[in-house]
Amino acid sequence: MTKTKFNDKLKLWYTDSLGLITSAPVSGSGDELPDGYHKHHPRLRLLIVSFKGDILMSNGKCEACHAFLLHRSVGEIIKAGTLVEQFHDGLIIASGSREILRVVFVDHETLTAILQTSVPGIRLSKSELHLLMQMLCGLSLRQASEVDNVAYETKRSQFKAIAVRTGFKTQTEVVRKTLLAINRDVLETTSSPRPKESGRQNQPEDFLNRYYPGVFRICRITTVDGKSLWVAETGPTTGTPVVCLHSQTLPPPEQFLTDWTSQENIRLIIPFRDGFLREVNNPYDREKHLRQGTRDIVQTIDFFCNGCAHIVANSTGSPYAVSVAVNYPDRVKRLTFCAAAYVGNYTNQPVRRLTSGVKNLFSRNEFLIAKMFEHYLLKMSTPAGMLGILKSAYHNSPRDMALFIALTSNPVSHSWIYESYRMSRNSVIMDIAMSSYDVWQNADKIRCPVLFVHGRSDPINSVTDARKVADLIPNSQFVEIEDEGQSLFISRLCQVVLMGG
Image (cartoon, rainbow, N blue to C red):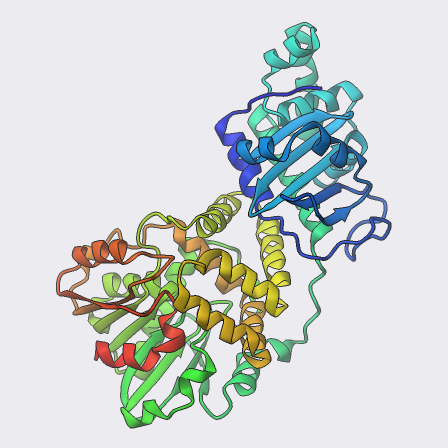
């Protein structure tokens, strides 16, 4: 058995990847194969247990996983964060976080089959598979030769054979791409198949008619570059235009129970970002998505607002508002940031883990990004699962938790937010990915009047960080709401809009 302390980069790869595996109850006894999993493929062994030792999920025959947990204590795994070892003639990858332990076992046969999904027909010798597992544990060729008490040239020759047969050129590439293949199979094994949707079910107007009956007028316009842009609007058509940049979801239906847009003569206009409430096939390109979102907002202002408008950006709509204000200053009359997103390094660990994982996956594999989203979506499909995800990030904010408990306890409200995420895959993923981008780097170039509205108990972006950003912007003002957290758009949309006016 080989035990080693591997380098920081390799550890980061494992930690980010395993952290995306949840304990969603999609497993069985291990005898049946999930839909979409190739029947000729050896089962990849996966065991998820609580810190107390309760089995939460078991996939495949997990004797080696159980044996490893007898060999290594829970405390050791938690302290290490991630452990990778050769064990029982295979490879163990173990990670402890979020009060659960994840243990994956890959034997030679499974590793060969996994490699064949990337390099069809590849066959490695037993000694070459052994070296590959040593490399996945973080060993260099020289370290591997010392552990096995063989000549360095022997290991070097074996690596050359691996490189030739896989087409991978360096040790780093071999480890990274093999890990990607393993992760893909772990996620494929533990994911539920996506339900097939008809085209009409994915259309924004169906969603709005179902959850916002009689509230929005839905418009589909063709932009100057030939793109279809969906825009929802409400309030009197002659009212003062306010362009609202949505968060990962729209403001909840409860925010429109009163006719405040008519009473205040506000024409609320909401352009939908690419992939919001509809499927798109665009690749996950953060910069391109930001540019396209910026152009869509500008064209919305030109089409609906005679070329200039007050913009209200809710949470993850903030990066797009900054981009418009910096690159198209003549289009923005005033700018209001509500619970401004991405204002410094996250101190909230669950949020940091999620955004770090997405950031690293963006540079590697779109398949894994989609699988990650499916895992979270699967948990969100039940009120308890959705509340559990929200609680991990918002437990320090009583106000936010009170709002989320009310939402998840109401079947209609739970369905609204779940369907919003289910139908907005591309948009939500891109919003999360934007957190690794310094959207405030040009904030000092914003010249229009700016208002920050922030909850004092915001657990995601602290008031202190938000004030630091506000200080960068000339003509900015800051309003701190004592009894609010992150979710201002859920409870105070009307107040936020009017404060900015």
